[in-house]
Image 1 (cartoon, helix red, strand yellow):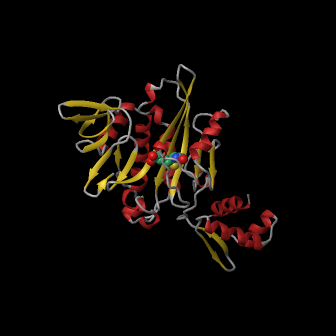
Image 2: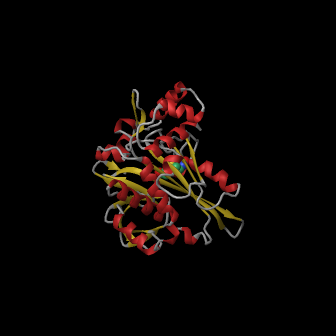
Image 3: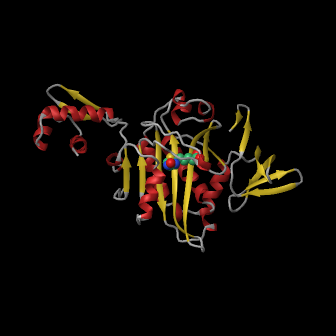
Length: 322
Ligand code: BTN
């Protein structure tokens, strides 16, 4: 594609390259190059143009695509990028059913039908967030996968901390919070084989709000959601954060599981707080006392102590429930 070729030439040169030279190299007119550069700028690239010198790419570009990702990580042969998809999870599920290998990734700039847990939708506007899905083909039992989502939350949280120097809280099971508002959600979808229920594949989908302004969120979301930018007043490179997330997801099963769960516990927002949840067909309130070895939430309900293994828990904050 011409745009990719232009980017490659500008990156290789690292200095101004004249439009005429680029045009000749690819056998097109200078006008075609000029138009392609305009499109690249609207794609998020920072390219300066000086008469009689040509074009130069700046380091601070905000471009988001596969060739940018390639600058930060090895082996992108099984990574698919789309400007817009319905849902990266659905897209990857299709590839998984056709036999895609472990480590296959789908990421997009925009989702038209981003999915959240429990049939909710996930708001996924273009140029603002990271919407990525990762395929695992784990050779283990379902029970052994019970902590997968928690470990993904750790992987994403570490990526945010290392690239953005921002510490987030983890709300059990799988939301990342910043200043008590939702920054990131994780949706894990599992496919199992037959009655033995052996995992065939697991897709973990991550939706992270990066450069949204608070006005970008409508209605309820304006109070419940946030982005890295809305809370820190800084813009971040989505591609750098994505690259770090991918690196962490690639080694997730090689990490020390106990160390990851300890990290989770240290960041777990719920511990020591009251939680409201459904229990025996009732809505009850209990005090969260900790997490067990399978990352279940230990809650005190009067004299009783119970452990929740999944579900949705609301936490009362001064601003309402989060
Ligand atoms: C939640 O908050 O309930 C989970 C949100 C998960 C959103 C991500 S965005 C990438 C992937 N594709 C989807 O359709 N959903 C997940």
